[in-house]
Image (tube, rainbow, N blue to C red; front, side):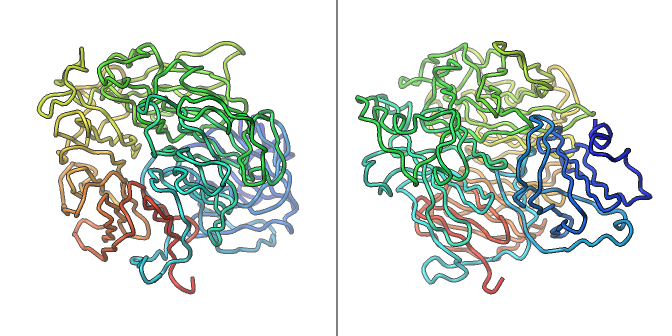
Amino acid sequence: MVEHRFRKAGVDGPNPSIGFMNLEDKYDSPQKILTRLGKVVVAYSGGVDSTFLLKAPAAKLSVSRRGRWLRPIIGRALWSRSSERKAIVTGKRQLRLLLICGLFCGLSVSVSVFADDRPQWQERFTRNGISNETGLADTFDPATGKNIKWTARLGSESWTTPVIAAGRVFIGTNNDPPRDPRHKGDRGILFCFDEKDGTFLWQLMVPKLGPDPYLDWPRGGIVSSPSIEDDKVYVVSNRGEAMCLDIHGQSNGNDGPYKDEGVHMALGNKGGPNLEPFEVTDIDADIIWLFDIPNQAGTWPHDGAHSSILIDGDFLYINTSNGVDNTHKKIRRPDGPSLIVLDKKTGRLLARDHEGIGPRIFHCTWSSPALGFVNGRKLIFFGGGDGVMYAFEALKETPPEGKVEKLKRVWRFDCDPTAPKENVSQYMRNREVSPSNIKGMPVFYKDRIYVAHGGDIWWGKNEAWLKCIDATKTGDITESGLIWSCDLSRHCCSTSSIYDGLVFITDCGRMVRCIDAETGKVYWTHEAKGDMWASPLVADGKLYVATLRSEFLVFAATRNKRLISSVELDSRTASTPVAANGVLYVATMHKLYAIEKPGK
């Protein structure tokens, strides 16, 4: 396929004699750059196997490099395998390259230093909580402004992790206080800020579901972090709607095909009557398409829709947040899917799981999927609300119109095989015996899955574990797939950060752990002042950790414990720290901080 695309671009296959740059793809997809006779052809996989081609005169080419990361930053036409349409390269697309020989015939290539965006929660595909950023601050002070580049005001509760792409920063929150005076009271909000200085650009405002508060928890706001690709923002709203948004908002017009933003903003709040449609202004979101997961996929959200969308080529993999009703004893939609796949261009439902997870869900479905290649096969890894890890074959092509494919399971691993499996609601409030569920995301690393599970925070047993699973097996691998298990404290919402052979994870027992990735041996622990719902971040050789007691900790990311700094935040946080383009982002319930060393 790659060579075929090269031929279409006028290059007869890869030939090192004409200057060959091999791409080391950390997601295991084929990627190549060739230069020939004053032209450049770039082929790379935007969604693991969605190949893109780019041609431009060599004199016009500018390549930016940071360590082993390079990217073409050229305003030329780009041809997409999936759509065969032209688009503009903005300079934010990232390629990981290993340069193995020089460019041919003294080609003129200018080199600039840029860092990297963070367009989704955690590392793309693998969900590993690491970053290649360097030169990050190891301390800051919100009170004095030390190392604070800018601060943006959020709502009164902010449970999501910010994402950064194309010069913009996105984060979910609530509407307290409102930025747009037309919309008063409790709402879900997704803010878009300017990456340079934190200037507010636009917002997605979504009325609350109701009147049942357990469908859309009061003041929770939008609790799903968006995922961004090119000029599109993919997010799940507080109403459980999967949305595709224009990254520019309404500043470049209302693109459609969805044109009812004013009607959507006027939907009855908390189940009340609809209002008259609002005028759509420059600070409103531009919705491209919308898929109502509860109504169109047949699910029942609980507390709030909480999903980080996984983008793979033309496909969006989404956790549906299917769960119990307000009695906490009944799954209203037991036949509803836990994992669905949508077409990213149209929002059409393409596939779903058929694992019968619904009746076994303990409280809710919290975890979002990851992706990895195992034995040459692309797999989707998903933690079910029944405490079982599933691996599915990734979709290879778009199903015919009107057909919804069944996701093909490759393996299943019951993280808690001795826990109750039937009539699970009877174990609600039982702190000694209950099923497990999975709240954090699975991490794919060296043919292994690392996932935390245990009793539900509010309703389940006070036990939790981190499991390391062999992802190369097939079938029911509950017995054969376990490599090691490590006890955690009480409950765990964390997604692991795996770096230099070490696993870092936090839990709701106030513990930070450093664990050997191969053996599960615990090297060190640290007791924080409060529980941790946020996942850790490893970047620049440092481990960043945030707590629900307004404490922010920075450690050396090594097997020997070394606390570098402790920072007092303005309020508690459940948001994972993020590093992008040389800046560290820390979100509390009330504020978003952009943290940067002076003079950088």
